[in-house]
Image (cartoon, rainbow, N blue to C red):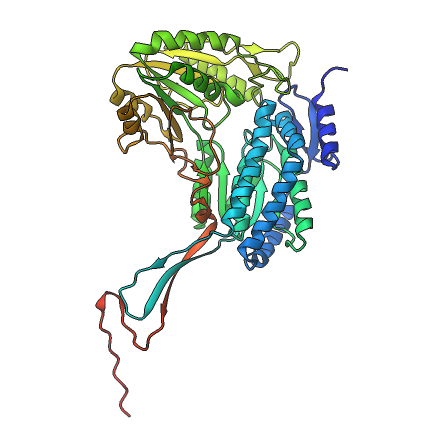
Length: 507
């Protein structure tokens, strides 16, 4: 019997112990072979209203639960993820097309953020603040924010939701999740795993985690509804530019994780063996469909003619194929539209540089799938196409001779997500990390720009949106702050030394 993603999907849901959804008008097609794997129902206006009502009611209960108790629910969810890591990781590969080690790694990220959030549930600290008034104490306290709407993208169909949801839950919020319409099955499965954790928890309110399925209209409904206190959205800069003002119009909060046109500088002293491996993974991993994928490479003149021929050789032999096969390093693009965008970018780049790769592969075997050989494009200058993010495995390579010039060219991108420098010169490394260096939210030395640990806040500047998810103090985005001043004396001194005396009324 030939390989069938539909068969694989059924087997995966059997491993979960839940039926594969097959009713509904939202179709899940695997980018591996283009086959239909399942169907879910899209949310309409009535179902959205019911979801938001349940989520709002759940928040009013959940906000009063002690944070460590909230953390217990997240711990139980992490246990479900551990027990089902293989099945969920395989489903991520089937529906998003990333290679199986990356699918499993995405589920591990979910487990890691659960562990992080459980610890955080006992560390939602405020401050005690020095006050100028005698017999007073001033402090800040943090309270649950409300219903959090999470809009996630196809390329990380489960991990990015978990970054948001696990923190939101320990912070006392309820969560409404709109996954990408291209990956509805992974969200459905995660919802079932969370329901198991909630049942073991015992008294989690109904509506604490809700899933709504559909396209742009569903996301717009979340953006416009005043019951959604925070909209955390991952996607393109275009999406963020349209969504942000809608939420701002009602004075809602946004946490935006948008595009990235990430760069790396390879200096004369760089360890080229190390750089070579980092460049390959960052540029072609997930078929170039990570927001942190390496897209622009600046190589010093003194090492260009050594490093770039090695990259050409690697690009010519990268295994592209079924992402479930052990030897595959690059799976398919998500759909034909993505391949068409890749080809348009390469056609434009060919007018200014030399293109290697970019061919459509496995078209005879899988006519409804879109496999592409990663492209290496040597450019004489940083033209408009280089400064435009294309969500595909394209790496633009350029020479440089002066580090300050390379940093300036690096920072010329409208995006500011992730960046990297390879050097063994302490001065070069520190300059790249300084205020005069990279203007990105993630700045790495001797590792690539792609991939991040949950312990550090993830996000970027400029047209990347400015949001921060996951570690560090990102939990504050899911809470509201109150400044409290307590007078434990018998006088009423005013701030700034103001004298405001009220005389006793004569009678």
